[in-house]
Image (cartoon, rainbow over all chains, first blue to last red; front, side):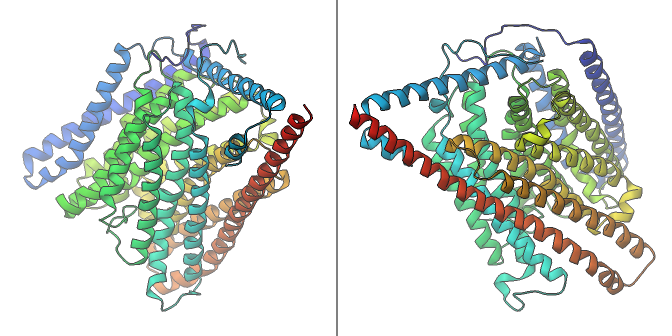
Length: 130
Length: 473
């Protein structure tokens, strides 16, 4: 089973990172909640007083469906530990990148050494030129 | 903080994961499509200064060239470059290849049919009446199926992941779903199911969601992948990057109606669009703060590392364009700049100043790696960068200022012909700026060709050397 990388150094969110994240989260979530509640209230008022206003349901339903989908995805992420050890993926991904490059460099060096001793076949040479 | 590589045991090889030939094909085709799209913009520029080189030829009329320009950039250049980038990034991040390499090649050829079919269809006058959705109606089902296959191909390795996921993969996962849904919403709902104001509302959502839910998540995901690799240090805050992702997810879908302020669409929807657009600016700020905090202490990379320079130039433009967006979406500001060249300047700053610069940066990084050589000439890289950046800066500034003049002239009830006469010198400056950008791209394509020839020469010399060593042994 593939994982993104072995968990090596679990880290906590540092002081400045934590507060920056928290402040931005609040700045985003509070207007979001206010705006959504306001829109819902106005939509209900519109629906009650104007029959023609029902056509507004199309964009509203679009938005509700999209938001609902992302709410479920968010919940799925929480349940599957996607937000634990929040800072760990940024390091494990870089380590994985370096490993991939190191492994490829080692493989290509071995291939080059083998060719120096055995010589590449015609097929290998033509394949390399493609 | 720098992290060092550890043991390479039990990790698949890069060449088992990434099909470099496909990445190369996508990047080269993207560059070719950008050349075609820029030719369209270049010809349209002549029309604006009252010199149409193809006057009287219906097939090459400016209105059709304009659609080739916009659709060529969106579906030819940006989509192709993103697909090439995805074939590199997703397998390396997940340590699994895409679902099926044969499917990847099928998608590549199918996408060429979609793009070329769109160009031919537009030149033949078969445009669909929706901005950015002008692709002929007979192309739409094919493009929709192609986007579905792209999602299946790339989601296959992602779905096997366990544990906390790097932010790039959050963005990419969302983009695969969003792009599929956005394309369907914009190309089928107004065409077949709704009309009037509802179709206008859906069209507004489509225009902006194509930027925010297709280009933006792929662009940001791409930056979160390449910037740490090139700076050799992790992103400043992964938590903050996730705030940016979820902010985008919840705010962006409603912003599109800000294209139709002062229309019969209910005001609460218009206010909602205004508010969510301003909120998106906060989301953008989290991303910009994160990237500039990451480069702190490594500023010399801006001078020495060409891809990093492209990326951060794009980020400066990104912040500016989103700040501009937060203002221009307000009702007061909109009354002044609507229908003016301000909007054109804004669009060029987003699509060329930001996403094209990021994708060019990725191309500058990936092609030498794939060809196993250095770029042919550092000087050509520098010229490419400076022509491009000076060009887009002049164009954006010129059109934005012109837009303000146009708005004030319309507000003072100046005759339309006076506004046009006033605009022509500004459009001439735009033409000069566009020429610089076009020249920069032609230079880049020449540079790509020279580097490719250099790589072939190096391979031949290497092969000849190996054969000589084997013979003497």
